[in-house]
Image (cartoon, rainbow, N blue to C red):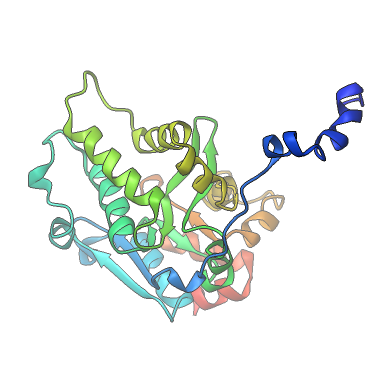
Length: 273
């Protein structure tokens, strides 16, 4: 704990000096209308939901079941190209990078919620996301790793939100200009951080976003891979809003249903009906 010193003793008085007061002022957060967030959830599976793995279809259904007042729109490749035409993009752009551009374009131009096709909804959006948009017009989970300040597998924004529009423009510019070397897998996340570091206005926008850690939103799958024996993570998982999963590690719908039964919450009961 910091020890009091001369500066600490003087600080309360310095805050009262009119000439110095502006140095310590913090911009107030302007109240926003939470109803400005469009009630639509966008998801994407390039080959269409009919060909998607069972785990993906279960995740899509979780958003439909827990958010009956929302429209869940699952885009396939053809629908996605009507929004972001791949013909205008470099051939080297991976499907993952294209999906990153698609999601930020949707949020910038239309507003709403983006959820990856392997994101499992555990709480209705109305229970937790509306309060976020009282003070912000953009949301992403915070700090999924030491090298990233945000996750982009779940994001939300009002139409025309500055963070979304600026990121769309910058990400598109990044991909359309020649760059030497292979682009990092997390280049979207790194470019987002670059924007909020160099732009004071975007930095203020990001600072207004409530900090909800990304780490608990990954615990369910980790718990499964560790044998689902340690009860310690259960409390955090029960309080989480979304869980990021992967069909590539062998997690089946049967495994997932067993894990959800262990959680035994009101929301998971709806998913198991």
